[in-house]
Amino acid sequence: SGTVDTMKISSRAKLNSPEGIAVDSEGDIYIADWGNHRVLVLDSNGREKMSFGNRGRNQNENAGDSARLLFPKRIVIEEDSDLPDNRRQKHILVCDRLGVHKFDERGRYLDSPALFESSTEEGYEITIDGYGPGSRLTIHSFSPAAKPVRYTSKVSE
Image 1 (cartoon, one colour):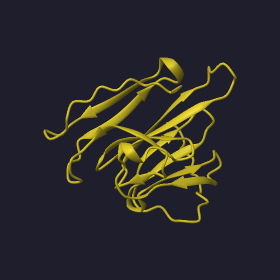
Image 2 (cartoon, helix red, strand yellow):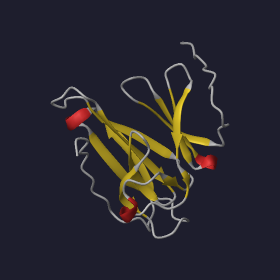
Image 3 (cartoon, helix red, strand yellow):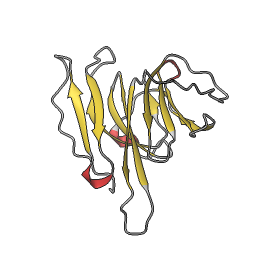
Image 4 (cartoon, helix red, strand yellow):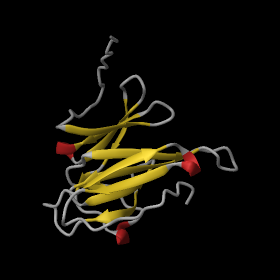
């Protein structure tokens, strides 16, 4: 039997029904804050680094804009540290009631590998296996209304 450590979260805004959590290779913690329609990013000590997202719908013509989310529930991080100039690139993928959305590490919208027609459909989950170019992102479809999705993880785009 093991022990469970707890962490006090230092954030200006309170969490409202956190649903999903992911940790990147640097130990930063990403929380899908369902009721606040945002992603909260904490350092490994629980201090807030940033948050992004406002209630709304992402559309591909909004690429580069601030994140819009509707009840985010799952989150994964895809990373690539094997870039030629030794920099690290990170993408954050969030599953909400409107689909699966991809953001850069500053929370700017990039694209949506999967979109729903209405906010009442909840049929996608996301998982990632590995880091960098060899990582595999899988978008699972559980709803009869969900369209089949094929997505290839390409961090270094």
